[in-house]
Amino acid sequence: MGKNLQTDLADLEHLLSAQAELVEEMVLASYRALHERSLDVAVEVLAKEPEINASEVNIEEHCLEVLALQQPVAIDLRRVAAMLKINSDLERIADLAVNVAERTKSLNEYPQVRVPEPLELMLERALGMLRDAHAAFLRVDADLARDVCCRDDEVDAINRDVIAGLVKEMESQPQDVAGYLHVFSVSRIIERIGDHATNIAEDVVYLAEGEITRHHTRTKRSRSEAAASPPRSRPPPGHRSPFCVSWLRGRDKGACRSDPNRVPALACTRIVQHDVPALPTRSLRKGMARPANRPLCAGAAPSHETSK
Image (cartoon, rainbow, N blue to C red; front, side):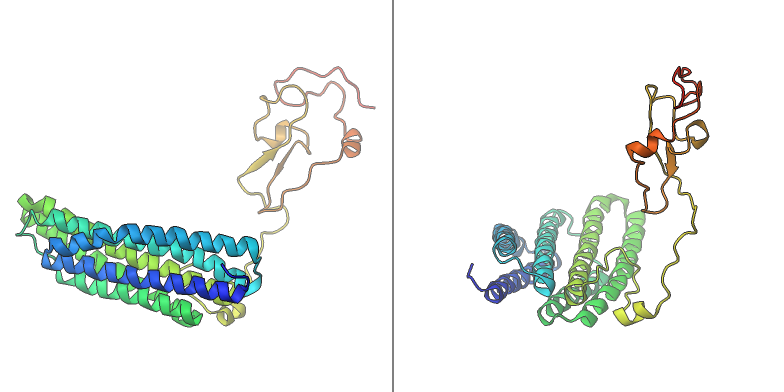
């Protein structure tokens, strides 16, 4: 790696783009192998897996080197973090393409099992998502990335239709169930490719705006829309969650469970969202000693100490 941060980032971007193009080629070739039942094309896809694996390791090592030696901040730091995650998603997509090629070899034993036409449409949609996610990364285009995220619903819907059709075929042709299960797996694999393309698009949104959109609803909102929305209300003071943190004092720690009525007030408290109260200091605890002959917990032996 060079000494200039921007040069290093440009080199990483070039490596990642080359990997993305190779992954796209593998996905296309794997489906062509399936559609044509071509073992030769399937073998070509399998042969590219070591190259992708080596590329993933190389990119990850370069990213870690940039983090350690250049110590990027702000958008440069987000760029390196995004490239680390995109690199992983691309490798997983390549693995999925290899899985499709392997299913092709298995399906050759069932020439009577046909590949549903909607499967090709689903592949086109998933591959289009991958290409647009890659383009959004190169242009740092959050709007295009959000559009990619929304298109994942279409891929999911096609997958459901394909599976419903396969179930009907298996019911009418039970002797070919094993073959249709391979097609079923291919449909799920292509749906997963769309999911990984969505992950890449979410990383682009993070790169462009610093917003982590993972695990949000499918309706992706821009920052301006999010800013216009009312803030989420916090629970009222004294709200009690179902979780309990117990601070036990004394010898019998097993007698006190999570019932606040069985322990002194400061021995058991509830967590209010993420605000966990601090333990009282030693001097404060001395001034709050329990009354004489009162056990710490129900069932514990009476104490012979007296409060001072």
